[in-house]
Length: 337
Image 1 (cartoon, rainbow, N blue to C red):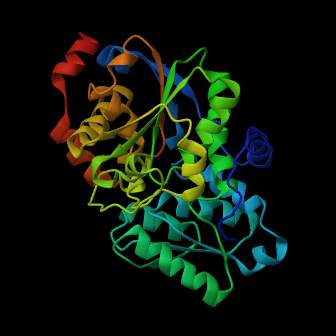
Image 2 (cartoon, rainbow, N blue to C red; image 1 turned 45 degrees about the horizontal axis):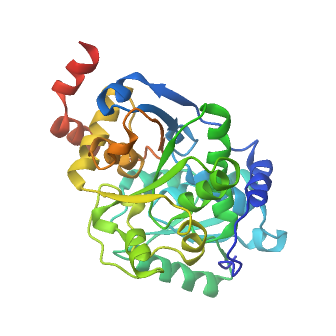
Image 3 (cartoon, helix red, strand yellow; image 1 turned 180 degrees about the vertical axis):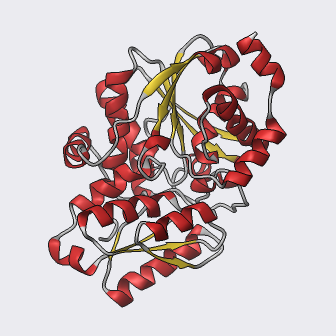
């Protein structure tokens, strides 16, 4: 399954994806958070994508793509490169559909994600110190072994699957003003923009990415995807050196704003989510809250804001250390009196 050359993702594509994946994907809750609303000054609603079977929204795109795989390709199996969550989604849904799955992950991928992929029956190959190296090796395996390659973000079938998250939001949150979307390669951003520009264009769609892997903001600056240097980040799921061409073409003309967040801001957001929501959320999933807490979006004060908490696959010891380091007793006192 090569990356498609067609650039346009439409609302029709997303609705078709919703029909394909509906019985296989959790319709995750989206609830108002009194605690986060108090802390941020916005009316905050949390879309709890970490409650998917494999702990991430990535299942949506994985299932969408696998559902369109021709039978002769399915029998041979699929291969993908992933920092972890796309691999988990493919492993789980490949098992459900009876497709052999090979996933190539960076050597520094979180152990919790590698272990879960193996538990779900995927053949896991550790290769590369960056996503680019991992992806190149996955491509080579695709050619050598005759396996269909399923991209983690830069594919209209995957983007359409991710866009189903926005379709759900429209039925869960009344009259929301903005949604903050974590951005790596841009698949979720492109999917969300596709739906909201068609059905609710007054909603602000704001991307959030880590300073240590700010590929989409640089793409916007240069007028197209460019390779940027990346360094280690708590948001390992967003650690992409170059935005996708398809994702950029679909998201760039319509995204309202894009902000970057620091490692300290990500760590604080992870801790706050644990304290106020009892939610174990990884760095990528905490990025939207990090942006809201950072003060970089003052125009959202008093507005109804949706935060997609996109994943919860974080090492337990890392999470515990972050909660201890960034715990906010003053903020909790403000909330709970």
